[in-house]
Image 1: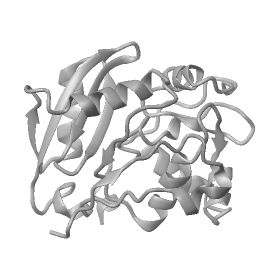
Image 2: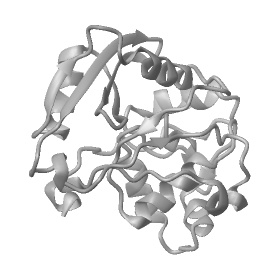
Image 3: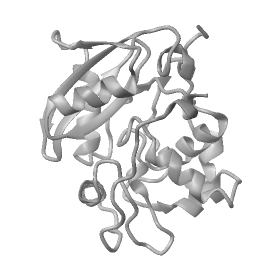
Image 4: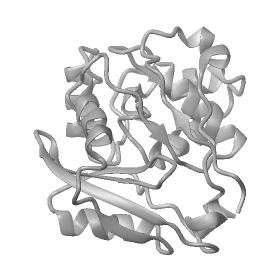
Length: 227
């Protein structure tokens, strides 16, 4: 298995978009075949908690955060986690080991401007990493369009591909894909539903997009994405 890299996510809310390439962190973790879609297995610890936006579950390897999700019940959340990582051994966190990571995620859900750093374990292609870097560089309280993100990474024709990276973001909120809307200022889809997307933007003081947007996009990765 390739060596894994621990990645700490610095507080980049105030970094201008034009500085994205110079100041962003790296997100390289285990390769997709290491445990995400076959091959060797790993252990993912998980913990859940009630939040004003719903029941939250986070999952983490010994490298870092690998999953964030909201749903109505632990049963649904754990089923989603198991479906996303079928080769992993899931272990409930019963000793508080994940408490600091949980606080970091809930702080972001609450719209706190300054929240603790989070280590990330997420396999990415070079293009996906460029998009994730650009998402992190969106200033707190602001939004960008898919086309603006595509232009920021030097690929102005890749707005649709940017949208796909946002839709498959396993650590939403920590990597703030909720800050991306359509170029005309209207709502775009969100994995947890557009009401939650609006709530997150409102908590950050961002101008709310118009309309209700499309239904949440499917976010489960398929075997072809891990190839």
